[in-house]
Length: 120
Image (cartoon, rainbow, N blue to C red; front, side):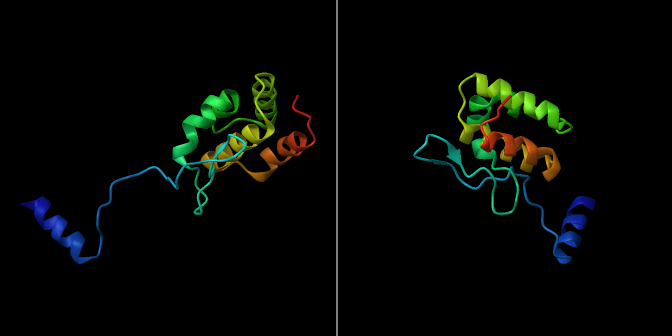
């Protein structure tokens, strides 16, 4: 009975329960073979592309939230040695940055090197 009373009280306050869901904003395969969108409009990483990115860039996608810039650079180098393309590497970096809220300073230099073709 207490649960029913609590539920009615929460509804009266306008509080409703919604199931927790991963952020998802679709899945598109682009002409270059990459998939996206990497980041949803709300800024969250798109959960639907995570498996594709993990397959394409396993070192980058295997990094933890507390990874350093040097660890990120080493992961880019490792994935590049697997013949991953720059767009695949960039997408994985962008995904992880959104997923872990990595600061611009952590990824900026790595992305700059990637654009310049300096993977390692």
